[in-house]
Length: 226
Image (cartoon, rainbow, N blue to C red):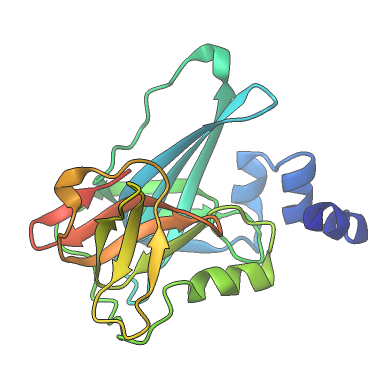
């Protein structure tokens, strides 16, 4: 409803047009002088695959900027017919590479294209994002909603915490040492081997009700959660 109302008031807005009718081609995005470009080291956090009502499958590959001191994300989005079956992905969770990304114009740029790929990057811990004990884990979601309330999946970098399961079998991400006892519900089943592990940082998607876990950093190194 919000998206339709916004589009009626600004039918030439490229972001709204992309979401409602047609999207720019790769060539148009790369040729746009106003498109945001970021050259950095990127890590593949994970992927999300969903079937749509129009018979297409959306394949989202989420990336983390490893050079930024604050959590910065990008998503590579592909669509293909459900009848084609699952296609092989060019990236696997945990892959790291040096590349220049060009972002689709947006109020909160997330969707991007790989314009140029330079090489691979060695493994290691994520940047130190210096999480504070009082940091609101949903502050990023609030800023995205203020700018573009039609965004369905908001990427978050959660501060130190752990994954727990309640008596009903529902998984929760629980903030560590938080006086407010902040806990966020997790979508789907939780791998039992993750329960109680101290997680230094966790990357996830928040849809306003549930977390889709992507990856985490722990004392054992990187954990693939998607």
